[in-house]
Length: 318
Length: 302
Image (cartoon, rainbow over the protein chains, first blue to last red):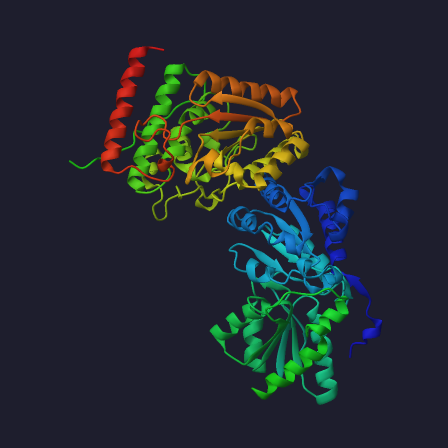
């Protein structure tokens, strides 16, 4: 049993900002490019500590992304971060041709992602970037679930060779993974075991999935396997296929469009290897709205109750 | 009789050359462009021919520092082709500089060739610094290299990049111009191939980007406008840039007035040749014209 009242809430962007600083201490080749909102995405921490390795590029995401490529091709390990809405789409062609096609050692931090950026509304609520980024050859795509994991993902990204996109959020979310929990790019973590169904989640819905699984067990004795699929590309086929075989039904949950998102990526693996009924929790083909993060999570049906109900539905189809 | 194509294995040195020698080098490059595009049956003739004289001086006039035997030499200057579609002239130049065998020019645009339709880093062709093809991106990559050399590693390496004039209609190009001026990248030489031609017509008719010089000046550039087919002017512009790299805090923009298709009478200054290869008859005519020009150069004794 997890006692939710004892779980602290910390924004994932803090993990990103701190992770880049750790990298900067370890490796003099780490460079950070700023896109005006360094305080928001917390690369300001790096800027303060390593001013000689920080370059402000202004509100120019296309140029920043491509400058990063030039630096990477000259032996540096540049990080560029902005709101995910602008770090994945304003520069989409640059990500495709200059970053991914060159297999350049560029790291992009997509902050303030999803509906939980809240009151700013739909223009800033990126809900489509997973669908785009997971189609790019050479790209690694990570959607960590909490502060600790974002920090580990950031450090791991800086220590591997090749392009990486890390998607994280603005609001404070439950910090439930431990410092010493294992994090490996491309290896999903099983947070709770069970064979009645599998719930596969990424980002902040991982916590909601854990809570839903706890409710299923407490209320009905249903044992759900909860999988934290933090790396969406390369995807952990082994864990997904095992979940399909062992559980026979899968619910996916993500703070992203259902079309083309993490759930679609899981479905590709499931359908090709071991088809089982699936249900997809996510944003259903619409734009976001202004509101407080918690209100939006429940309005758009990404909360534990929606996952709980989806689990009950899918069990009927097993 | 079918037209037979072969490539001599002649290479050129990167030293000072006479005007006559530069003429002969660029003739050879133009011949290579026609040959490889004729064999490829597709590709961009006009811009490739138009830049032959500038490539001849940059790579064979002791301007760009490189080492074909160890092409990834850490201290090399960088050449970034932002206008990726004129890859044929870059490939011809690299082959004639000894980066790879000239006979490979016959494989342009063919399956599994290292000479992809647009430069491809993953094709592992020596001398290719980056993939390019989506216009406007190479110049920002050049910027990232110039920032690394000047501001991070503090080496004296120079970065040269060629964009087309139509290419600077892309918005991100001006983000690059702003940042180059902002960061005082005096080690950056941005060459604008100003042939006033793009696929749909004259640049000034499709979307005027004029006045080019004033735009770059306002972004803190040293601007030099030259005749892109005059070896003395090309050499002098590059030498001014090299001097500026040491003494000035401004990046350099060389606006090279060129003619698309230069050297082949029926292609010259005609935007229809932007993305067209010569057919057999046109290739024969082109070789004849280049041969005549070669005889003229010899007889002139410049």
